[in-house]
Image (cartoon, rainbow, N blue to C red; front, side):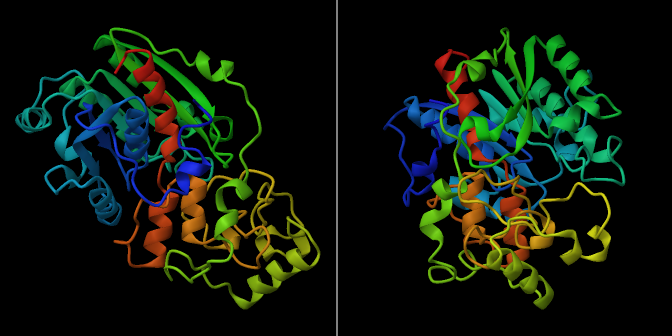
Length: 378
């Protein structure tokens, strides 16, 4: 199932796949939800197991991403909230529930699954200013506070692999606190490509099960098979470039200098730009940014998709065969978002790139929720 759930065929669907009528509902809370990647993965995993989902609470600070969430999952502002988690789950990890927290608990009622993708920029190796001690890192522990208040059956927290190096030891502290609450906790670093996504993204996953323990061993048992490629996910889109929906299917404009750099790659059948053609900060010095100004290959996965996919200077984001960067539609597909998932409420290119680039690929949730349901934890 790992390879088939949320696969490339699913991403090309034009209409939402419907759950079984009167299916037993899986009630979820999604913190730091963005546009809804984790919720969408949970939706598909539930559907394939004869279940449906009900969103009890979705929370994010980005109103643009939240508008996308509300439209797709058909929730109103009382459920899909633009709010700071510190204002809702503000107590110390061991403190009694505050009045506000009791109100949230009452409004959510039963919660089966708590999923969260706390901001990862503070842990990222690309963050050279405050890496390992960024104040945003402590938001990881707010998810644990939410678990204490809401008492879900399962908690899933997604972050970058380097979260384990945080100076505040957020993963260790989260694990200890969850175990004291009666959860069995396990963690793993998971490669998206191994799950069948056409992206080399690697993520740290924490799964806590109330009264039991989740085993990641099933990932090792899965047959690797053929690696999913860029071609699998976006080859059918290469002729669109603005013909269907201008913002979603249009590549960003390149500067004259970058256009020449891109043309050099295609003309010479190269995928990495020589240092002599790079900007001065990258030129003739040792650096680890080989993918910057690079071109994607049809027969390989993409690098991690970020909000910078509209610029060739932000990563390997040039189209494999056309002299342009990938479009938002292509980026969404490489993130694993299907065509039936709408981004139409986003009206600017920068906001669209940020919304798609900051999202968690749905498959990262779908694979684990599917297994959790299969093993009877949900």
